[in-house]
Image (spheres, rainbow, N blue to C red):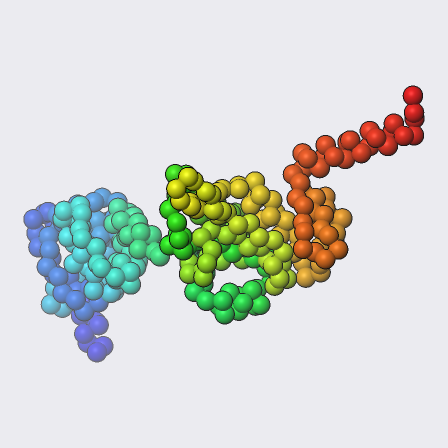
Length: 301
């Protein structure tokens, strides 16, 4: 062992570009020309074989390079042609990238980095569970600490023909669901129900595991000869209920005064079976009229 090592020697190597050299790269043997190794002036190989750096040679004339030689053939082909097919697996590309960086072959390193980036599995912005049973829905609602929004979309549940705008409105509801889920996925659990038993398009809003609001987007309209199903797109109402359900982010029940201040008025009967809903503009008008009547009573002309 010591005799073999003593026979190895370092020297500056410089020769004609057509001269062939024998390379032992980590036990892998290669045969190439000085011209190939020095083709790119900015690489370490060019410095080694143009007389700028010493190289280690054994007694049989093999130039020793203490690197893994698995991908050195790809490096030689890249130096010859300026381009090369990259390995198929990310592991091999990463190994080739390490060698390209060691030998300072910038263009090959950039190609490897781009390939690794392209092979990366994109991370989803948000995940929307698709439920197929009432049991799954209850399980998701029970374990989630977030308020929830569920959209039921079942076009095939219709018994009648659709009105002319129904398909467009159904798509608008789905697009709004996607938009809201991208915006509020960190604060609200969004669920899509694709096998609802009877509904065609219906939004449900949950806080603390209980349903707090519902927006049904379908109705039956009567024509002269038949019934039609109409799908609507109450965008403002859906936005309102989505913002309203954010009040249930905390485990404590939302403040009732805050609920009233951020939503349209909901006045229910004592039995809770009748609910009148007003828009914010209607509520403001009713409040203004009440104030005006009160002023007239207090200050009669």
